[in-house]
Amino acid sequence: MGSKPTAKKINKVMESRFGVKIDYANLDFGKAYKVANALTESLNKIKNSHGIHKAEQNAKYMEMFMVREGIHNWMIENKDQLIAESEMGRSQAILAAKDMVDSVQDMLEDVSQMANEQMPALLDTIRDQIGMADADNFKASVGGILEQLQGAISGAREQMDVAARALAGEQTEQPMDMGMPAPEGDMAPPVEAGPVEGGDEFDATDAAAGPNDVGREKRD
Image (cartoon, rainbow, N blue to C red):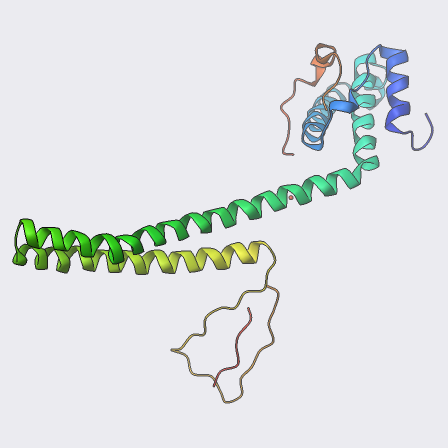
């Protein structure tokens, strides 16, 4: 078949010799990796059991070998697609991380609304309907809880935002450690922190598929 046959050429040879071919139109890199890994496991089992020379005389072994080579060649020929899929997956992960930050921001705004809008109105109702002392006790108890909750959510939101920005490759600044004095003028530069047509015809690939990739501010 030559030194570097194309995936299309291997497909034609397989169809003529074995009556099967790979459906590249519906193949993506996730499926390709799974099928290729499963085929490799099956091929290794046959080689270990019978030896490479006997294995090469086995029609089923050669069929699986050609399918795997066709998939490998297809992945090489479509490496730009792999890069695009990887970038898309990375972007989706970054968006999901930022969406979590937005969700925490929503929590913070809800608690802030409770403290600044709902709480005063509720205290007025308690004073009118229950009594001044009860209103004061409720304010001292629940008001403190809301204040602590606001601080905790605000701190968590800030840390999550830093983590999401770092994931996206954005430069983030670590807060200075105020407890550790630095020598005069101490300064550090910032550091960037495929399926196969006729799937039943490939039942020899029943082996389990394998795995599918601070800056410091100048201190005064």
